[in-house]
Image (cartoon, rainbow, N blue to C red; front, side, top):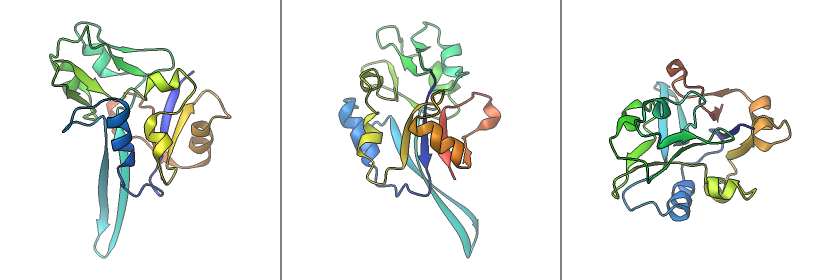
Length: 177
């Protein structure tokens, strides 16, 4: 089992419903976010291209945040989801510095927090909150090892990219082109 998410950059309109759903579902404090919207413009005027991406933790197979955690608070659970055990986290920030995706933040209660793919929902067979609320259905989630899962199908059918492939982290967040 290998959980992953794919974001269709042709369908994402940057509405931020995913951000609000995550904040609500996970009690994220005001002013903080576990996921966010990025707008990237490329090309030369007048031939410009706009890409809108919903970004979050990449739940890397080779997660540098896990390797550098001095207490073992950052760890990988079955299915490849990267989590932070709040009671073990000392808030040192080593994992924040190690993450090439800027996907972690210091929680005001003294620990580091990040996207969990809503593991509490996934364990019940549900999709993460962000996937549930997306009005354009641009977020796809599931088990990459299951060829019938939504995410497996779109990753197999479409061209995609990952962010910072040179980091060698083997991210499980795919951006469909």
